[in-house]
Image (cartoon, each protein chain N blue to C red):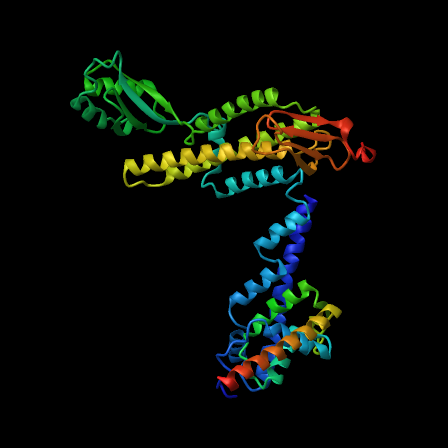
Amino acid sequence: MSNERPPGAGIGLLQGTLDLLVLRVLVAGALHGYAISRRLAELSDEWFSVDEGSLYPCLYRMEKKGWIRSEVGRSENNRRARFYSLTQPGTDQLETEQEDWHKFQLAVGRVLRRA
Amino acid sequence: MLRVFSALREWFGLRARMSEERLFHLDRAVADLRALGMTNREAKRMARIRFGGRRHSHAGLRELGGDLRGLAHLFRAHRVVTSLWLQPAVLLTAVALIFAVSPSQREIVEGMLGHTLGPEVHEAVALSVYGAGPGSPGITQEEFESLQSMATVTGAERSGPHQVRAQPVRGVTLAAITSEAGVRTGNRGFYAAWVLRQPKVVTSPAKVVWLLIVLYGAFFLYARTCLRVTPRWLLYAASVACLHSLVSILAWALATQLWGGTSWHTSTTAGLSFSLLAVAYLLTAASQCLYWWHDLRHRCPVCLDRLLLSWTQGETDRILLSAAVTESVCAHGHGVLVESRWSRDFRPEESPLQGLARV
């Protein structure tokens, strides 16, 4: 296995983006923390250099806000794990954050084209 | 106590959740990395690197409420802070901690009692001359050298101009020591006396401070409290006050014990540190008294639960006209506490929750 860092190494996630990504990943269904981090890495082609540990404060924060809920269940290898799933407020939040993200993307794009 | 346990159980549960998730994550990461051909050691190292530093665990605990701030929040949520048993529990824990930390528990107990435990122990023997006083020349150098060469005592040392202290040889009597001292020095006026072992820790200053506090407290309560106190309220107040004084005196004993065991470079440093210790002690004792009174004044004299729904009328910066008056209600309907800058009155007949009163 290569120890080379992915192309996005060194670029941290923009503040608040992790919430959006986690909410989006959870649309597919309930996942445990490790599965969420792997799914994020796979979907971004290992682009994001996120410390996997930073996912948990984000999950707990979103759980506190009521965007996601957690339940204890059994993982694929029959181990006790905590599964996170999206709630209705979380779905609404995802829509809002997605809209905001598109607006942000368009605004940045406009600046880059016109400058 | 149940409230404390339940808050602690919840807090440890939150911490366990974080730790359990971290372990699960690392185990899965190690398994995946090993499947890619890494050795177990490499896989563990890489998994830890990918997980990131401790700051994530700390951030996670903060979000979960598993840190100290979370514990404080849980204590508030479980109404531990207002619990009747909080002060006694904390004070008893402090007593246990003081005994656990002390290098010699026996010294602490002896200091508290003011005398040594067990039978009297002859620590040393004092040799003096009959009739020696401030005007007399004291023990001469020749006499001191003769006393140093005695067979019935060893390690003779001057203890002032009129006295020499020494360790008696095992089984020797005072008469034998007196006789030998007279023969060796040629001065028949020498006599020996036992020096008894004294408690090493002196707690008298702390006891005096608390005696003064108790006297002032009794006068203060008598003069200012117009509460219709119940025996239960008085018993609680006295018990907690006793525990406060016990902890305070024990803390003083421990502090002086540690101070005495420290080798100070100069006497100035020793004196300065002792002064600081004394000031810190007085401040702590004053804080204890204030906390005790603050807690007590906000408790219902009947059920001892904290009074709630404090409501202030008037201006807090006024002294006479429109001065602030605060009303607090007992949640069990035992009455209303009306307090102003000048008076405190508990009025059972005015409780808005009287219908809810229970025995």
